[in-house]
Image (cartoon, rainbow, N blue to C red; front, side, top):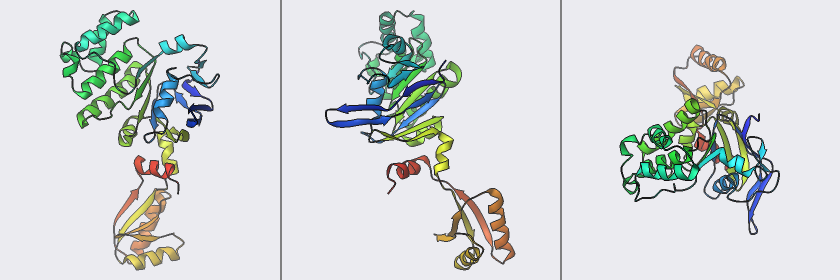
Length: 301
C-alpha cells in the first residue's frame, strides 16, 4: 500500500504557449493536511483540476494512492472528494435537499446526508434554503457534498477565501477533525498563510508552477535563521564587547541582535554581559512567521 495519497512526477501543463505547471513533483502523505501554498496564478487550481482529471495529465505523471490516474480514472475518482472554487449547490433547495439530491446521483443512502450535516455543523440549518446560507455555511455544505461518498482524499481549493473569522475557524476545525477522527487526507490550497500554519502538517510552496519547498511544516523553520534579541544597557559598548568575543552582533532598534544557536549559548551571552557590568533586561528568540518565510522563498533576491 502506497504511503502517498498523491504523487506527481515531473508534472507539466500548458495553456497554449504558457506553462502553468512546471516539472511539479508533489508528494502528499496519507493522513496529512497538506497546505498547498502560492500566490494567485501560481498554478494551484490548475494542479488540483489535473488531480481530479478535469484537465488531462500526461501519462505516468499523476498517481492517486499509487495508481496512475489516467489508467485508473474511475477507481481513483471514487476515492476523492473535492471543493474547487465555489460549491455546486442549488439555492432554491434546502441544505438537506441538496445532499439528498447528491445521494441519488451517487447511489448513497439518504441517512448519509444527515450524518454529513451533523459533521459539518449544519443540522440546525438542514431545512433552510441554501440561498439563505452565509458564505461559511455554503462552504461547509460544499464540504459535506464532497464527503457524501466517504472519500479517503479531500481536495479543497481556497476553502476559507472570503470568510469572516468565525467561518475560517469553523473550516479549520473541521479539517483537523476530518484527519484526526475520520482518517481523511486533505490537500488544501490557500494564500491565507497564517491559517495553513495553524492546521497543516505538511507544506508545498509553489510559485510560477514550480515547487520551491516541500516537507513537514516544522522543516520550513530550518530555512529560517532565528536571531537572539537582547535588551541591554549601553548598546554600542555591549555590541563592541560581544564582537570582541567572536559574536556577530549588530544593533536593531533598542536591542542587540545576534544569530541564535542554542539555549545554552544564549545563557552564556547573558552571563558574559552581566559579569562585565552590563544590565540585561530581556532576551528574546525571534523567528520569522510563515508569511515572511514565504516571501523569502518566492523572492530570494
